[in-house]
Length: 131
Ligand SMILES: [Mg+2]
Image (cartoon, rainbow, N blue to C red; front, top):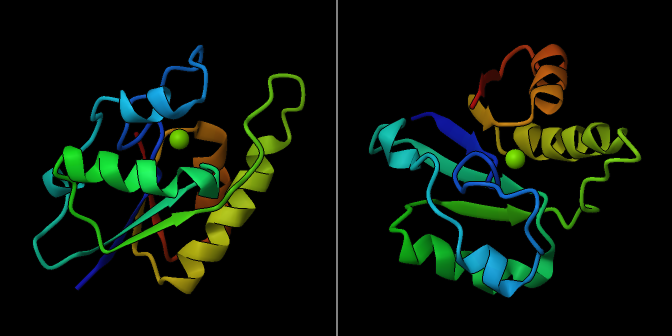
């Protein structure tokens, strides 16, 4: 059994950077990649997202609505990416790596190139797939 990790926004869910990050935004996302299309039935699926914890229920509803099977959902409650402070992706990468190590993630899907590169460089035992 492998553990497969997925970022959520821009990876499982489509991303609209111009969107206003409210309840309607989270619930109106379309599916970009469904984990079942890139995993085996016995793989463990862990979703690792920077989303605020206050959107946990909305996120669970959306995943249910879209028939996305997963074993664990972790919302890291990280600051929303800033166009003026480009160090945000380092913070996101570090927080995600903590989970990747703890959950023993074998393969991790990520859409942000800078985050994918950091994780790939720091964690040699996790295969990083850039979406
Ligand atoms: Mg993303």
